[in-house]
Structures are given as structure tokens and as C-alpha cells.
Length: 139
Image 1 (cartoon, one colour):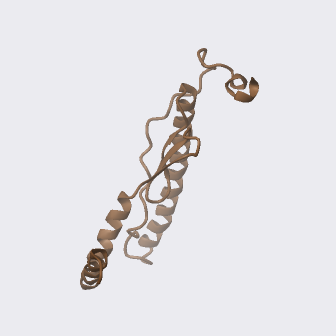
Image 2 (tube, helix red, strand yellow):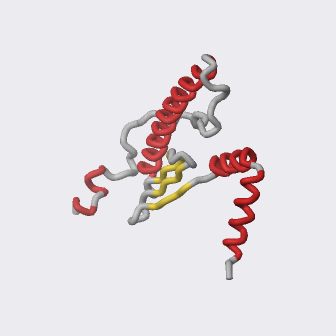
Image 3 (cartoon, helix red, strand yellow):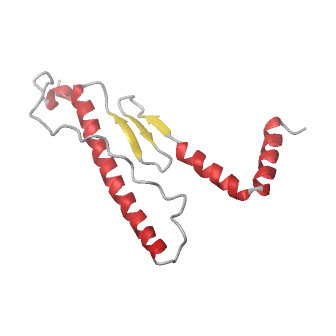
């Protein structure tokens, strides 16, 4: 006896075969919504990524120093990714302009929007102990 999952899968496959263009459009739309999240074994680092694996959120722990560092890292990653994605899109746009391809590929991601730049680094936080004293090894 086949399970409901098998029956659903068969119906879905039949539907996809009847209208492959719609199936592809639906898959691309759903793919853009996929996200992933993970936490380090010690629980101090949490990350989220988009469907392409690009970092969208980084949390390094509870201290204000870690929060500021996480914002700086996230901003730098997004800025680098935006530049790389824009360059790839420009390469493909050149192919469109030359008539090599009709349009940009649907799978080609847009550059991510950049959040406001985090504040520039200031001096050490007077409430935060020196780095050497934050480690258990220092004791």
C-alpha cells in the first residue's frame, strides 16, 4: 500500500509534467524563500543564510562587544556579496546586450540590499573587561 506522501508526490509530478514552465517558475519562487539557520555547539554563535547560502544574520553572543562585532562582520559580508552579485549580473547583462541570451537567468540573484553602515569602531568599551580577562584561561 502506498503512503499519502507517495500519492502526493505522483500528483505533483504529473502536474509538473503538464506545465513545466509553471513548475519551474514555482520552484524558483519557492527557492528564493528558503532560509537556513544554525547554532554552534556551545550556543554562542547563531547564523542565518538565504537560499544561496549568503549570510543574512550573525549573532556572536550576549556581550555588547560581540553584538557590535557581529554587525560589523555581517555588514562586510553583505557588502562583499552585493559587489560580487552585481558583477555577475553585469556579465550576464553584457550577454543580453550582445544578443547572446534573451534575458538574465531567473536563478541569478539580485544583489542584497545593504543595511545602514554600522558605526565606526570607537575606543574600548569601559564596561567591558579587557579581552585577556574575558577568557577562562586568564584565571
